[in-house]
Image (tube, rainbow, N blue to C red; front, side):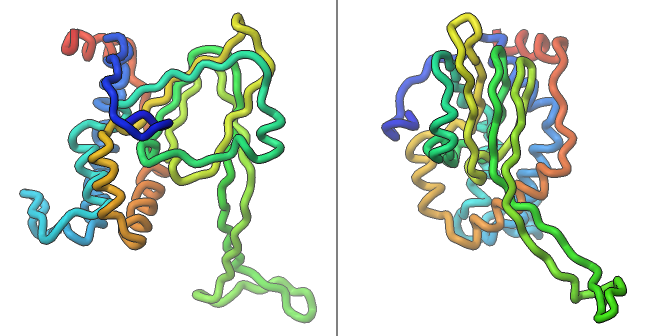
Length: 248
């Protein structure tokens, strides 16, 4: 659907080489996204682990199951949008907070590639710190007994500069973020491709209907824990060209 009006429309396909790049990215990282799919299915209340080989569904779908099926169908990184920016920068919007936002559900898996120009991705993340020591009355440092460690959380702002060739994979649905654009003219414009999950309005409406607080919590935890340790690879030119022969 068009993100501005929420209605489906016929979107022209990207050039063949661009489509081949994203297909190659899915292929070379296939094991990672297969693992993500399996972890989502295990987290689903309505998926029977005992019948995992034939994907038996016990009752009905939930958010974890729907996202797993989208991955199985190859929806991830299938919706491309081109971001082009030039002119006045947006420092004022960053300062006022207007530029800060979270994305729709299609950015649960969001791959961004910078083609030209420079921008900075600002994001706000919560860092958890566990304290395992404490000082006694004599200021002697003592280790806390197991199970009595103290955890604190702190929100921090992270700045990541994006230059041509830089790539990031995020779940932009789940984190507040804002792009910082600088004053540019057309010759120094910023161009980036954002690849998100491809779905129809009916499919995302169904996802929202079956999403519960519990299934959403499980989904976000699975995404974070799986992708945090994923060794993502960028496809080589040969791998892209191999995919190109299949779609041309």
